[in-house]
Length: 381
Ligand code: SF4
Image (cartoon, rainbow, N blue to C red; front, side):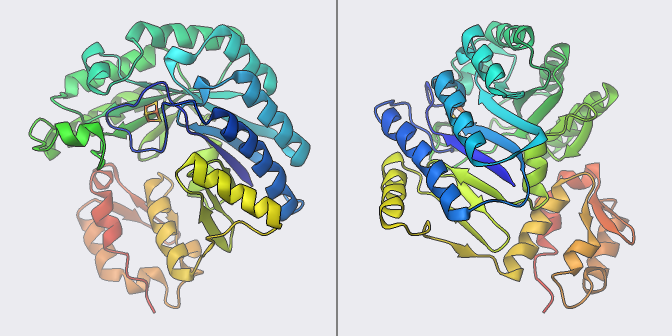
């Protein structure tokens, strides 16, 4: 079992971001009270759990933006409620501008053992384009603070594939990240999400790199990171050995989780539900459920079709690939029989590799992952 806590507050809004967050702190108190209430109430609803919690993730929004004492208090409340595994991973997402010595010490003493830093770029003009409010220097200072306090598991989020970016620039970004010696790197290809500031600026999309350029950047970046000892364990994620993010691996490997806070999703073997993307609406929902002593609404039953599709999407993103045994346990005909032609064709084009136990996407295939998945989407009946 894993826990996700959504902290929906940010100091400002970045131009590319489509996550639910607000720059107003008006509802901070309401959020803080409701979150603690939700944790307490859902533990009563779910009862005791069979397996200890393996990971907790404070995501956002910008969890580092709010009080570190409050984060520590939430952790204490969770620890009173659920057993923790002895090697639990507890991550907080943090932005460089809000990482201070004082906050870092409180997080560390509260048991947080991994910090995922929203760095995005080491080029001032790119930080401006993305409307990040920290400087390049602040990234270095933040890492120094975290190391000094004692954190031994740091991750950097980077964005690539933006306006006018060249392979040389992308490699410069990655070399800068490598110089910090972080244990983990997440490299996300910029996607222009609807209703973001970037979507308005990029109506014509003329300045974005072409597919060939993106392909070159992806392969060059991957080669550089691999040469420096980072293992690509998922399409966007690289880690030094033993530092793969347990929480993300859990999502990709079908581990159930409870999500707390507005817009957070929960998932158990039988069902899934997502909270509204509004502090007010989420808060009303939690109050009603607590007052009436009823389960949280909007449960979506997980049919075999839904599970099959999720397995494909999540499994093929990972470098270990997807286990045929797992897929076949949801199918009336073995996957490899039903999709024989497609598998042969994709293997011939070096987009996947296939053996009797699993299917993996190759480096070349990683660039066209969506179209590979599309070929397997019809579930055999
Ligand atoms: S990218 Fe992060 S910091 Fe920027 S608006 Fe989105 S959640 Fe907030």
